[in-house]
Amino acid sequence: MDSIFSFVYFRLLTQKILPGIVKKPQNFYKKIIMKKSNYNVTKIAGNIKKRRLSMDLSRDELAKRAKVNYNTIIKIESGANKNPTIQTLIGISKVLDTNVEDLIV
Image (cartoon, rainbow, N blue to C red; front, side, top):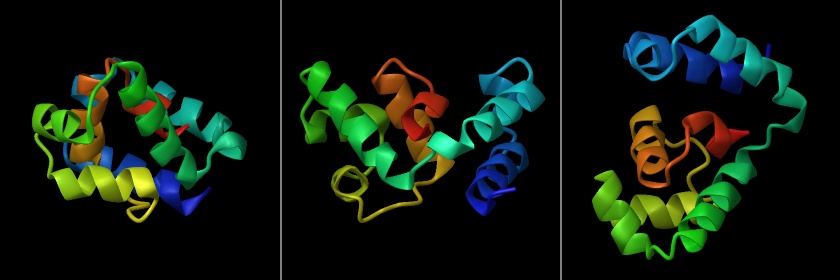
């Protein structure tokens, strides 16, 4: 099992976030594992930027609405931050009207 998936799953479970996001956490985890061949950490940056631009949001607006630091958005979109926290991804996904899975896969 790929370590990034184990880490994300562990963070979701330990922070008790996963049960609040999806109805069946095990199915969510299996879905990510099934897609792991398509998983690429650099896709996070592209997915966030593409969705942000399609909604005509500036980085500053996204940061304020997601309640994350502006520099965090810059680092994620540039690929400098390859491991954003789950809290950050959840905040961004809510603003972009998507789910965390779509941002990372």
